[in-house]
Image (cartoon, rainbow, N blue to C red):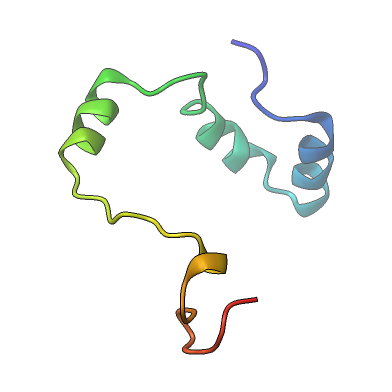
Amino acid sequence: MDDPYHEGSRAVQDRLGVRAVADHIGRSIGPGLREVTAAFLGLQRLPRLRPGALAERTLLGGLPG
C-alpha cells in the first residue's frame, strides 16, 4: 500500500516523535469504506444539516456570520 500521508505530514510526525503512532493509524486509511463500516454508518440516524449562514441563530446563540 502507498503511504497515506503527505510528505509534509510525515515531517510533522517526525518532528513530534509520533510517526510510529501515525503508521499504526495509517493502516486504516484507504480510498473507501470497509463493508462493515458502511453497514454500521447506514444504520445510524444522522441529523439533517443546515448551513450556518442560513440559520437564524448559531449554536452559541448569536447571529450567524
